[in-house]
Length: 318
Image 1 (cartoon, helix red, strand yellow):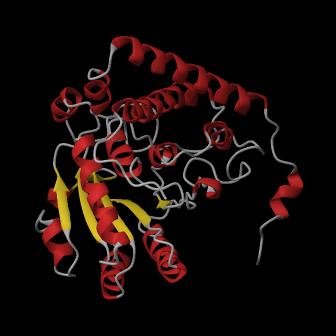
Image 2 (image 1 turned 180 degrees about the vertical axis):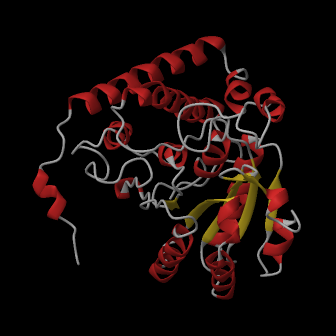
C-alpha cells in the first residue's frame, strides 16, 4: 500500500472541499422544487472535517457517517451521480432510491450505510473495525458522529470496548455546538469532551478552528499509530453549520442562535482559504471541472427511472 505523504496535496484538498460545497449548494437550490424526496441535513461550513480526515485514508479503509454525511461520502470518493439519484428517490441511487439523504451507502468505496438514529452508527463502525483487526491487513475505520451522539450510552460503551481491544478505529466528533437546536451549554456539565475520552486510555485531540491542514496532519499521525496496533484515537473537530439543522435555508431568526456566531466561521472558511493558496488558473480549472461534474450528476438523477414497485419487497427480512 502507498505510504501517506508528509504533506497534503493542496489542489486535491481544494477540489474535495469545493466539490462538497458546490454539491450541497445545488442540493439547497433544488430542494424547494420537491424533486428531492427526503429531508436533507447539509454540511455547508463543515466540509473541512470530512476532507481533512478522509483525504489521508487508504482506499480500502472504511468510513462510517451520520445522517449529515454528504460531505464524508464525497470526501471518501463516493459516486456523485448515485448520491444525487438517491436524493431524487431514483432506482440508480446508492440505496436504490429507498434510503434518501439520511441513508446513503457506497461499499465500493467502503462507505458504510448511514442512519437517521443518533449514535447508532458508532457501534456498527466498531463491529467493522473488529472484523478488520481480525482480517490483519492494516485497514481501519473512521467513525464520524456529532456532539449530540456523545450523550448516547452507546458512545461510552464503544469507547471502552475499542480501547479494551485496541481496535483500529478513529473516532471523530464533528462538534458544531448544537444537538438540533440545543447548545452544548444546556446539555453538558463540562465542555471537556477530550478529557472524558482520555479516561478510557484513548489519545484525544481537539481542533477548535476546523483547520483542514491541522486535521489532515492529526489524522495522518493517528492512522500510523492505529495501523501499528496501538488502538483507537479520538479527534474533536469544533465546527459550525451555516444552514438550518434540516433543510436548505437559514434559521438565525429561530431564537436559538444568532447570525453573529456565524461571522468568525465565514472568515475562517476553509474552502476559500485553501483555494487562495492555489494558482488562480489551477483553481479556475478545478472549479469548472466541478461544475461540470455536478451538472452531469444532476442530469443523471433527473433522467433516471424511479424504482419498480416490486422493489418494496426486496431486502425485507421480516
